Image (tube, rainbow, N blue to C red; front, side, top):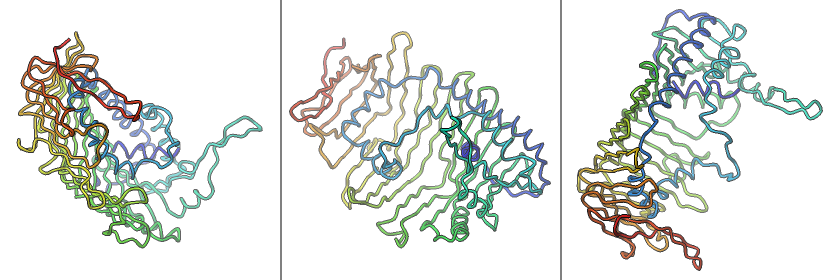
Length: 466
């Protein structure tokens, strides 16, 4: 019940004011049944068709698996895990998320529970009923039946929040989510026959939070949200869709416990530059797919706790222009921005990553799969030169550099990689765990385990290809 509005928001483009007469409820329902169903269904078909047969990345995976051995990936991901991963390790989500995405169920809920004649207040305004957001399934052991009941406290809060949806006709159907007595509209949707989009105005969202706190007689959250995000999906034809995400205005997100200065060490802060963040084109007819990634300078500050000190993350950016068709994946302008990626904990450098620092901080790569043999070939230009520093020392070694200059071929098992041209090497600390291989040689990986120290690691060796 509670996912209908959220589902609509996950697949939605721009927020524009309009003054056209609102469409009647019957037209709204008809447009949802036709246009929304078309966009969602063709979008799913495009994803399924365009991703079939892509390389699995055995060669590329072998070349980069050493990053995991160094602990660099864990160091980069760990701060965000502290923020977003539930502290309840027993909590889990059952089922495949893709199975939860049912266009027919979404449309049925919207048409039969939200955009009904009974919920229509006139002038394009629909009240959001408690049955849509405050309904819980309760099992009755005496009758062995499950019934839907309304949470009275939730229903009361919903009435106080004055949650409504305003619908207007303006180059398509536009939906505005309204909150509080001022009817602030921090969220807006656009639905056309071939397009669905959403824009989130974080500045207005801040105003709405303050207003809602006053309505409920509570203290406003200690937060400051700035910026605007727009996402959209557009259908170009059968099994052919394009999606995009942009930061229309630079993002600045700050929040903390009450009484904590938002610019102090005890507050969470996230900032990212404005720009066209991602655009993807999926054509299941070819099949082919294109992805353009353009994340700008992004920083984050995570306050410390009893276990971890405060953490600063600086990512210079993340860019790639990827094209996948048939059995080939091409990656151009692959970069982590124009500066070193760093993670600092407690004022001390915990991680640094430099990608092609001496080659313009970017590279191109091609991965080609051979369906007959199951092998995959990775070719890089000018080279892949990944230098890492991690402050802690895993047992028994730390990887400090990965260098691929030429091309590699991985077999279907992933157990060996042939250096087709150029060279492939890694450097370690201590140095005896590294290797250097040249054209015609193969690199083998053997998983090792020491029962006395209870440590495991990958042992690399160079020899004649099997």
